Length: 198
Image (cartoon, rainbow, N blue to C red; front, side):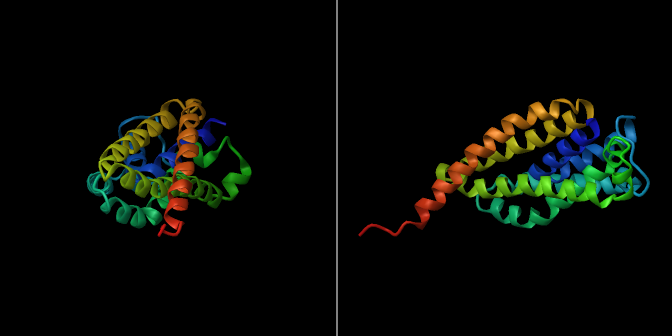
């Protein structure tokens, strides 16, 4: 249960920002015992790799706060965020073992797939809602939304590693925001698809 929640929380965080959970898992694997990377994932704790991830994180945080550029960035991140979700779900030893499940151990692709699907779902919601936010606020909402998403990614990553039981609690407001955002996106698209009045 705890391992699944750790993987779920980290992959959710990756859907909001690909680099925050990667960086956190790598740094924590180096400086604490909170994360133990399984065989094949030691590259994630390499300081050179972490430096590259940190540079990508800074670029992502800047680009995602600029209206219109954020949508281009989201298009590029369509491949990156799900891949990050797969990595962080399967890279933590807890997620890799998934409560010592022999099936999961024999089928390591399953944790990758779970992480990819969760991160992709969160990313899809994020990228669909951003044009609506930009249009509704004349672009002013982009940096606010991006900052909230970054904070959410950081918070969810911390919760997933240190308090995995709280992942369920943290997902409740995210689900409510998702429900609200889906309604807004549908209304926005319905308005755009209406023929102009003469």
